Every structure is written in structure tokens, then in C-alpha cells.
Amino acid sequence: MQARYPSLPLRTLSFALTALALPAAAAPTVYEMRLMTYAGMGAGGMGSIMSMLTGGGGSSINRNMDLRLTSPSDLPASYQAAHTVPEAMRIGPQLPLQGERRSGGGSAPDGEPDGRLIIYWGCSPTVQKGQPEIIDFRTMASKLPPELQAMARQSRSQGKAPRDATLPPRSIGWPAGDPNFRGIPDGASAVGEHVVKANFMSEDIRLPLTPALDFLEPMGLKAQASDLKAAIPLTWNALTRARGYDLQAVSAGGNDKDIVMWLAARNKSPMLPASQHDCTIPEGIFAKGEMAMLTGIAHGPVQGFSYPPQKPGEKKPLIWTATVNVSAYDSVMLGMEMAAAGAAQDAATPGVGTLLKGLFGR
Image (cartoon, rainbow, N blue to C red):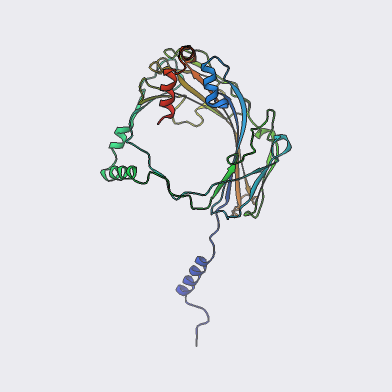
């Protein structure tokens, strides 16, 4: 007589084969919405820097929104997706989410690593004990095992061009790829309901933004001194919705290889608490450079959303998750007076070339 039920091992194997035949529980679609307020040179780009060097104001304020949808799997060839914004944004109302086909790999960097990163940190008029920390890129590379060094050299000599982009996109966004985007108007507000619809998603993403999640006010970062050989006091606005602040400055270290960096704090995020609105760059750390770029970030509110809603203790599979992140950025060029005087005499200011090469040329 045949057994009515299969033995335990056979039953287990049957369940396993069935599980393999079914699609695994898909990871949720992830949506990111970043609301950013830019001030200083960050708002005007390179043109703003050159304007300041030649006597112009060079400072402006603008707002930006960056949207990014990431699917756990390849998007279909016929994908369509759009983010609908409330009327208060004064753009759109539908913003197309677009992406490019993915590459299967990338090219390796040229040349051997070289130069040093010299790091200082802390808010104090003088350099504190135990500083700076010096990172020698060539020494770091030499500490790799011989096999990895050989592989790195081989990769630098081969495959200089990236592989063809043959894979479907998994990440799409805005404003990249939108030819109609002309910037977010002054006075625009993100408050209201935002809706993301996509033909490959079973549920819309709905983000009801309250005034707490609107654009931040400008950070208002200011340097109270301009002599790079002296201590440089810094101040900024007390933003009521800020969670904390990051400050850093960077300069060429007197040659084309060294970079000097200052951080308001080490191993902390944010670096400074929301209650702090002043800091001092220690004396003399940028003395060998002709200019230094100071940047500040005000970290505003962050809020997460997800669907379906979860009751306490529930663990339903999520269809989508979303995060709204609000921040403000500001930047100041230190040592500007000296550089501007040189620019007035010579359009090809050596200090500008050295700094920009040191900051962006590698």
C-alpha cells in the first residue's frame, strides 16, 4: 500500500523546490527626496567664484530638489514614472523621472596614487596637540599585498574605456535628463502632498510634507577674518530646524600634491550641535596656500515613509520606502582679498590655478 504522505525528507525537498520556483519576496522600491538650499559660491558655481575674484558680489541663494527612485530589479523597457508636486512648488506639476542604461563595469583610474592629505580638526584659535594627521597616498598604496598591487597595475593598463551600457536602468531621478528644468523659483515651497506614479509599481508613493519639512533658510556662513596666516573665526545663522552643522575647509598645501583639510570635528555626524553657531579655524594651517574653500552644511529634518502602514509588532513586506532629507549648504572663499588683488593684475591668477588644480584636478 502506497504511503498517504511523503516522508519528511521528501516533503522538505518538495517545499524547497517549490520555493525556488516562486519569486522571492522582493525588496521594496526605495525613494529619496532631497530638499537643498544653496548659498554663497555653491549657488553660483564657477562663475560665482570668478565674479568674486574680479570684484563682483558672487553670492546668491537658490533652492534645489533632487529625486531618486531605485528599484530592486531592472526596469522594463517601457517604464514611465513621474513625481507630481503641489502648486506651491511653482514648477511642474509633473516632473519626469528618468535614467540611463547601466554599464557592466567602469574604467580604472590612471597613474599611481601620489601626494598627501594633511588633516586638522576642532574649533580653536591654535592647533591642538596630536595634530595634524598626515595621510600619504603613495605609502598607503605600498602597504597593499603584492598580489593586489599587481592587479591594480594591470587594471590601470587595461580597459581604459568603460564597457558599453547594455543593462536596463534600476535607478531613475530628476532633474537630471529633464530638458525643461529651469530651476526652482524664488519663494517656492515644498509643503503639500507629493505623489509618485510609475507604470511598474503597484502602489503610488505619497509624501504629505508639512511645514517642518520645507526648504531650510540660508545658513549664512561668514568668515570674520581673511588672513590665512591667522586664526579665522566663523559664524552662521541659528536655523530653528537644523539638527546640527558640518564645517570643513580645504586648500592646496603650497605645492601641487599636498592638500590641507580642516574639519570642525572628527568622527561625529553632525560635527557640531544645533546650539552652536560659531567656530574658529586654527591659526596658520592654511598659511602655505593662497586661498582656501570653506563649506558648511546645516542638517535639517529627516523623515521616513513606507507602505503598507505597519502596526506595532507587524512585519508586513514593504512595497516602498521613502526618505525626505532637508539641508542647507553655504561656502566662502578664504583669502579672497589677496586673490582678488592678484586677479586684477593678472587674469590667470596663480593662486586660483593652484587651488583649483589641488581641489579638483586629481
